[in-house]
Image (cartoon, rainbow, N blue to C red; front, side, top):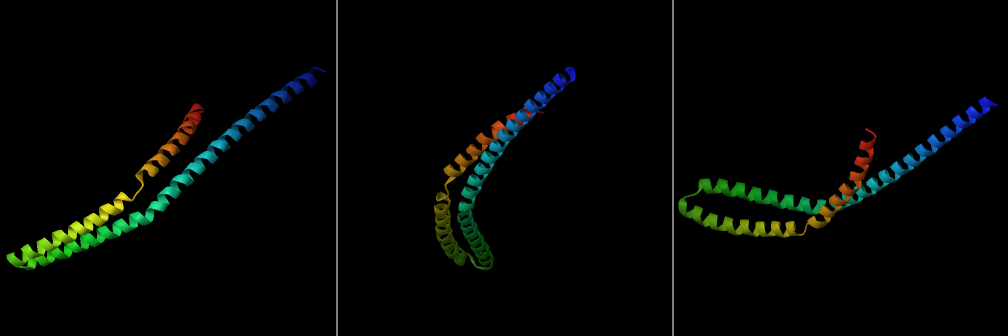
Amino acid sequence: MEENREMLELLTKIHKTNRLQAIISSILCVFALAAAVCCIVIFASVYEMLPQLNEIIGQMEVVLGNLEQTTQQLAALDLQSMVQDVDALVATGQQSLEQTMAKLDTIDLETLNRAIKDLAAVIEPLARFFNAFS
């Protein structure tokens, strides 16, 4: 009779432990799912900005190519031609710079910053939770 009671107590403890593990596993799954959703949102925001960044980089490469060509031409010209070419270079550089600045202004940095803060807010409780078991 005593053995049955001890066996019942052990089985009850095992059952409680299993329930606690199931609850902890469920909580971890919810946190992992929330973190995954936040990551997807952030990656989607960054993915939407990639074409704009690629276009800006392309324009910067064009500007650098123009500067390189102009520098080579200026080295081969006399002083009067050089002054005329510098004037043209300034006009072209200013136009390219204005176009590049217009593209940079279209990037929605506020949305990107908000997405990063949201991700940090989700990951911070997870870090504290896992640090509790360390």
